[in-house]
Image 1 (cartoon, rainbow, N blue to C red):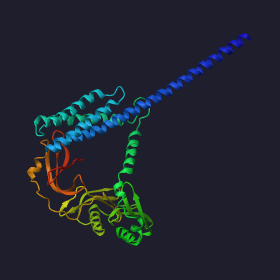
Image 2: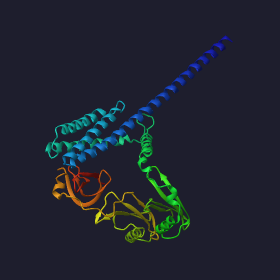
Image 3: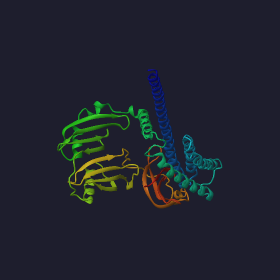
Image 4: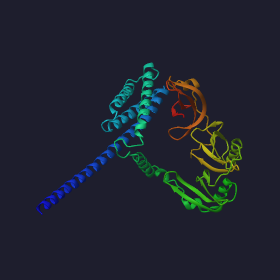
Length: 415
């Protein structure tokens, strides 16, 4: 009896110790997984922020290489300093084991060079400056290429979560903050809803002109959107399929969508282009030039830019969607930026040579043309767009300069 009791007691003790060990092991395993998840999220978040800053830094270096105007050159050098410093901070947040030391050494050198050029008022035409900019651009492009697949890895780095929800969450939070404060100045200028849609008949007639037929069960609503401003919405059905049309308060068409299935294509792209152009004239959007056309899954899409006094407006565009089964227009979208119908002549326009003198020696111009563009104050001005490549990389860029002042309006990397 005593022997059996001793064995029972011993077994109970072993079970108790084993259970405690199992519980301790499970706790430690959960703790390790939690720590791994935290490290992985920090790794991913810091790297993704660094990649974004590297992309901005590359654009700033390209802009500094392209522009030889001293004022623009100094402004872009300030951006180089800002993004190089921000990328260094992001890389410093990466947990131990990351390649932050090598990366930060190169970023620090780029930051130091830009600061030195600003304080010494370096000549943007200097061969040594341009050579250093070229090398810095290549370095940043290489670093971005190396770090991007690590930052957006599809699997865990240390056995935990990937933290893929971090970037979208931050981006959405910033969008909500911006949406809550940006439209405050425009909110006071809104027209009361009762004054806009008191009589819905004109809006319905305008909508039927867009669809080219009657709209069943048409309904007119006054929508107040804190992000995109207020607009008038007309909804209903055409041939049993839902239709949605948005108008600006002035009556200008903003968007149109007729949701219906498309059959086998019977209309070629050239005929669809003619249909789209005639439809634009019918809805009151004349003097447009087609800049892009595509055809996918029985639907043709055409992009247009408005023409003012024979000059295209770069910052304004719209898209027309045509169903290729019967050639009906089933969609329209614009960017909400439209130039005035006329513009006064440019005062004291600069010559071609004066404008080209503001471009850096690494930018090889391949094409130039007169355009309309918006200045930093949102005013439409006459400008010249230079298309070319950045030396050493052969990457295409477009530079837009104000024809009267020579000031840089935009620099865009073309794809």
